Image 1 (cartoon, rainbow, N blue to C red):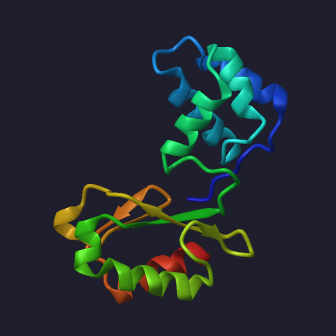
Image 2: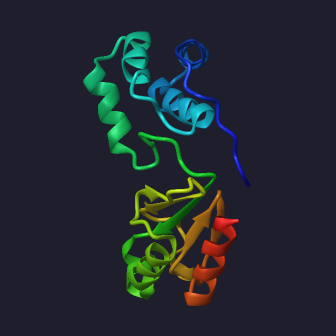
Image 3: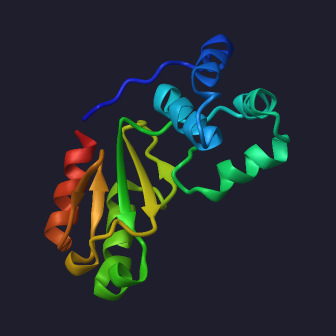
Length: 158
């Protein structure tokens, strides 16, 4: 699933913020909407969100940095998330994460030089019974082994 994102535009950002400002829990809703539109939450959007919701920049920044799913820069065309929770680590997730890092040539939290794949840690996919697990572009995969992680990496590199 390749996703095309809009380039950052202050006017479009303001439009997205205004669309969601009246909702309950608007901070999270707006940050998710911005990331959905632009592929990340642009730094200039933080004070815009703060002003629209009558919050301090620190409050919005605190929410942004607390949740691991928000990005500071655009993701690659494909996002491969590897579960780093305890059950997945106990089931061999560390070795599989190292294998994915080696095959992609990037550490967790980074994007390949060709912008094809972003490799991210995720802290529990709720698939503990089928650990270790991963998610590629929103599709969850459990019971990972070397062959499955290699197949996921190859799929993401296409």
